[in-house]
Image 1 (cartoon, rainbow, N blue to C red):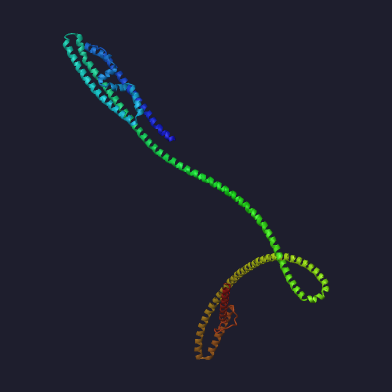
Image 2 (image 1 turned 90 degrees about the vertical axis):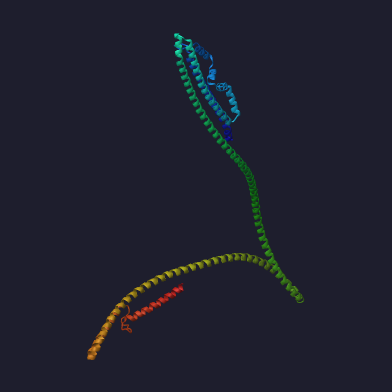
Length: 510
């Protein structure tokens, strides 16, 4: 709404501004016309002064007549300006008419009027300049005629000669003054033209701004209408949503009340069901007791019936012993009643004990199951712990045994290498000795036998040294004459057997 009021107030402000500008222009026109009239009156006053050298009576008459003419008529005669144009510059009625036209017309019409006025002013200025030049020429011709007449009439008078000599200076001064006034008028007209052009440009800019503002206002009005429509739609949607929300709130409140009522009914029904369960249990107990009594009575009835049959069969026989049996029967009845009462009490106690036993049995079964599960879990955990400890222990033993075996095998291998080297050396010596012995045996048998015995003693001594350095006993000997070789073979067999045992144990563990 604020934008609408601004859009409505903008054209009114523009109109007011244009009116103020027009008033200022007209005031400036009036001031310029007054200035021009004042200057022209001053020039007329200078012209009306009598010449120092002398005056012609016709010229004096002309000046006196021109001094009495008003300024507006002089302007009309000298510049050939239309009285309508002068009235436009001087009258205030035209201002009111222009104001009325501006108030009724549009801004474009006002600009057209300003342009037409400018064209009329320029045409009037051109005509005034032409008329001024014509007036100058006519005044010069008149002055020449006057000079000719004065030459003819004046024969020897000094006063006439002096007057005749003063006319050209006066004409030259008037022409110079008119030229100056024309130049001033042209400069004022140019200034007025520039000012009017500036005003036209400013008015055009204001019009373009006003058109842009008007278009912007139209766009904003359309947007505002769209926004109003959207707002109305949103208001309708919001009202419908509010009505739905109120209905949903009412429904939720009703449902909450229904839920509370249902909760109360449920609590009441639960209480009633608990009471009915208690009554049902009581009725079941009574029904069970009655059923049990019915079974007992039916069994007793069967027994009694069988007994009655027997009695009927034995009626004849029992009739004789009736009197004897009556007393016994009474005693048996009393004992039977006592036994029945005792039996009922015992039955009740038995039922209570059975119920307690059943409960205890169920609890004991549950406890036994839990205990069995816990025992199984504990046994399993113990077995797992034992197996883990056994695995770790056996792993450590295996690692230790392997380490010891590795050390033992390394030592035995070193001994075997030394023995092998010594054996190679001994074999080489023996081969040389055998060769020498064979040669000696061929030469003499006794020396060869002594050498062989010495070699054998040295061989046995070397073998005993090797046995003492080894881990096996020195007395053990084999095919090679060395005590350490059979021990090495036996240790290898033992390691092989031990490795087989380890593999079997690993497979059992797996």
